[in-house]
Image 1 (tube, rainbow over the protein chains, first blue to last red):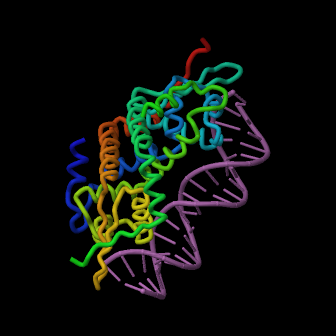
Image 2 (image 1 turned 180 degrees about the horizontal axis):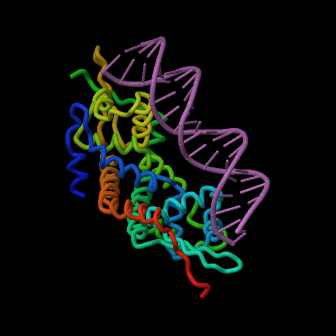
Length: 139
Length: 139
DNA sequence: CGGCATCCAACACGATACTG
DNA sequence: CAGTATCGTGTTGGATGCCG
């Protein structure tokens, strides 16, 4: 954790910013967290394990492709666990892992920030459209 | 904040999940947070105000197009402030607003989570490639 | 039921060239 | 220096159809 801040706080000098290594897997996590389907799925799974069709049902806008794809990604990262029951009518349940729950907490914080500030953001966008003037004297 | 949880915790019943309204602006925030350029810019601006060219310099991989575009988005949302100095050699400085700083904190938390868990995630992806078996008995 | 493969449209992004 | 406009392209993601 301290590693991140130490990498971030460095004044943007000549060429380097934060280490490419760190930015790399941070970007990877960002790809998951920033993906709306991932967030929606993780959020939906907060209540407990759900079947494939239940997820598809709970998240109206999603396509089978995206549902399957995102679930695979999340399963690969160990965020959700996939349990297939070898029954005649196939049944597969997805559930948040401990790692997934810790991610959920972070995502929830993010959502909380969004809720706290969406009014201000919306307001900013509105006034921006009206008069985005922002200039300063020459000195 | 409680609004989000209350919307999330509801068991995915018939058709509803979380309110479309909430998911809407959460998605909007996600579009910013999930965008690597936005994160990079916000992170780079942590140190203080920077000029357009300084940002381009500090973030090697970015194109003018993306830099301008992302900066506009961030400025519209009130995350960064744009100050143009009417000098002969044009000078424009970008700086995090209080809102932007609060976002930075959230992003930093996210990055911290990434740092804390990237080893486990990477490990999960590895073992997933080896033996992703996960089945349960019929009951 | 759960999942995968294919096709195709939309869009995001980068590179380039030009302006004030 | 700080952008804007345009074009080409790579990827994303939805719709469809088929299989265990």
